[in-house]
Length: 112
Ligand SMILES: [Zn+2]
Image (cartoon, rainbow, N blue to C red; front, side):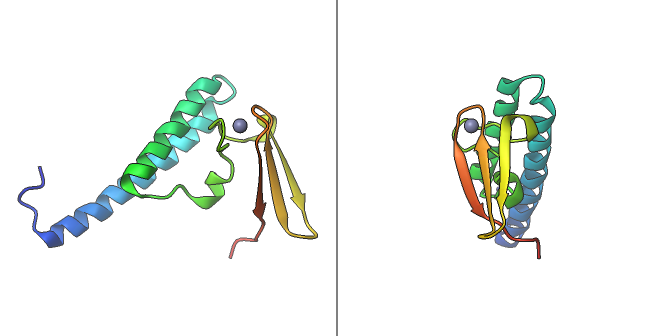
């Protein structure tokens, strides 16, 4: 596999890999959100897989999604298992994971 590819094609292949990886990450994260109410473990597994793909392919998990994944216990942070607060005076968003207690703070910016 891939032996016949010239260097030019290799570059093309890499971007194809990135496209597929991005799609898979997106799909996995959506699935993680979907199964969360049913199975936390499964949800975490999906997030774990998405992270693995991200690491292996150097494709980043979209920032707005990454903010809603608990770094500590690895589950998606959605309504029920997270507390999300906006501190408008200093434009910060504070996301607490109610499952493991991890708290994350981000500067909050409106999308450009
Ligand atoms: Zn957590």
